[in-house]
Length: 409
Length: 93
Image 1: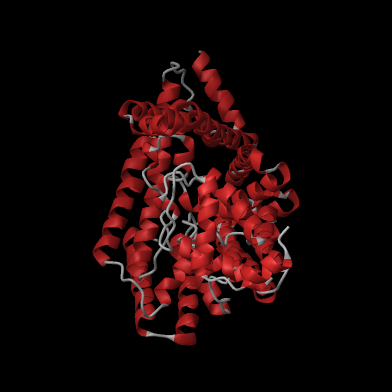
Image 2 (image 1 turned 90 degrees about the horizontal axis):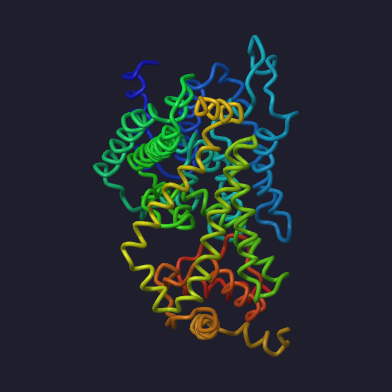
């Protein structure tokens, strides 16, 4: 597919979506909107990404139909039954990504001629799908939204702009576009957002990528040790431009369609500590983990350990959350190490803040937060810490060894 | 443990009364005084972070003898909606 064809097809998709939302109503709209998004996901996310898109599409459809069945049967039940609906998409995710028996996409199933990839590689965006779908169950169970019909559910799960890389848009937010009293998103704002995203993703990201580990350190030449922090900084910048740029384009495209999507970044490069950083970076993932893991687990531990130990209950929970986030990013010791470093950073901030408040008192703590000198040091330190921690995110164990060898020559 | 009499009284509360009771809990948890109105949200209170949030939730659950479901407190936008949620949980008991 050449670029012009791609842009034209995207344009048709966006216009069709907007027309359906504005001019139709009721079950016909839901059915057509679901069909449009299923077709668009097939075309743009699966057909364009994989040689064996039919197998991926069939697998996706099957997973989502099973998820919907679980939602339909259990989400409005009492006691523990809604958890069956909540866990169905999560279990699919765990099976596809982490259970060896389920991971391999057998060549005879996907139609490959030789050894195939894992199902995780074919099922593009399955993590985001799992989080979106499971969060929907919580919203139904908590009475925030009405249980969706099949067409509403398909339209949401296959919503193309956020299919592959998120943001993890809550169903309640997504459905605002279907209400008569919706807030209009100015087309000029949406277009500007797409343009900004394109510049970050295609232009700035590619420039930064020239000086990252892959583009710079892993070129089989010896390197001075200074090249390591250079690669670390540029990898962080590349990741930010790449990920936030893609999210900008997704949010802008959805905005053109009239669908609001939750923000995923809020100037994380200027965060003053790792706790603030994770409130500004991949915001929808942090929000999901806060709702599903952090709040319930820390409340439970506080009840067990007693209210006087709430500090430690929160500290333990923070560790659990970031170990989960680390392993969610990928299978491998390097991703676990990445999670450990995030946990270490945020737990350190947690106890440091408690200590500062006790040591400085109310007024002293306020003055500390308002000091520009401390702010500059804190922002610089946070930037460097996260850039360094990405070393494990960016490189597999063999690559880490290769980098070490290139620096020693 | 909350007595049966107290449970009956709580089931007849309205939003204003719930917020008045929440005020006492907020005064215990936060160092800086927070004047509660239905429109106050976490963003309006600098001290309201993850640590104080958990302390608050545990104290509120104990004071009102309720248990919040996963994600439902975080879905409320302000103290007024939080008070309505507490009332809903009280009335479901």
